Image 1: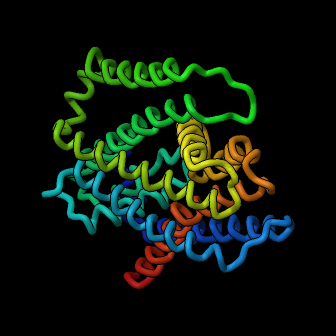
Image 2: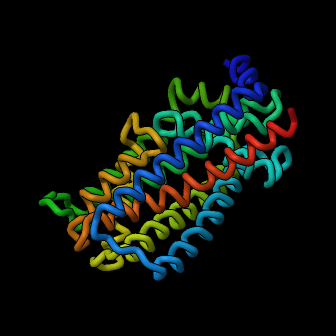
Length: 302
């Protein structure tokens, strides 16, 4: 596997083609969504510029926080922040083509030496697992307190307890039995690194959930502040653990936005546009920018 990955990472034609294809894909999606907006009564004016600017700034903070998390798990002595940040963008540009962004670890290998590729994979998978635990815990809170558009009887304490139980069970399974032997052999991450990475994971979660809430309110959300957050918690946990979603969960995110938030909008297209704008700012623009930069850089080198 490493040989194939190494060949692909060193093949300029393959990388340029992939990055140009990514730019075409993202441009097409943006154009289709623009056409959707034009065909509805949803009005967008200059008043959206300020929240878009705030969310855009938070995108940079979000990416920087993910880079710090990856750098922490990889080891700060072996990975500086600049390379970590580039690795994150490279991973995103590959992950968008794979289900549930499973291919991100491949893209991150571009900025890692052959001797450190195992460490990069471990850091990526550990970071994803930590982020997943945070998402699961907050999702349990969302399920307990969100007012669903249909009647769902979920006792608050039972829901939170089940979420904590799943997290505890996952931790116990990973610490014992065959998975423990696998972890001790292949996954060597110091507990203090895991703790620091967990702090970064929680900060990231607060950042991108707040981005979503800002955009929901900008597009006409009429519910209260807490319901917006609880709904976003639910959306992210379902999106994260729904298998097989492509394009970094774009379609799943939009469908869930309609289901969860349409009742809080006069025009349900507002919920869709909030989800799409967040995807565009957090995923689309960074990947498109990185793909263009990477393609131009490869052309210059050749």
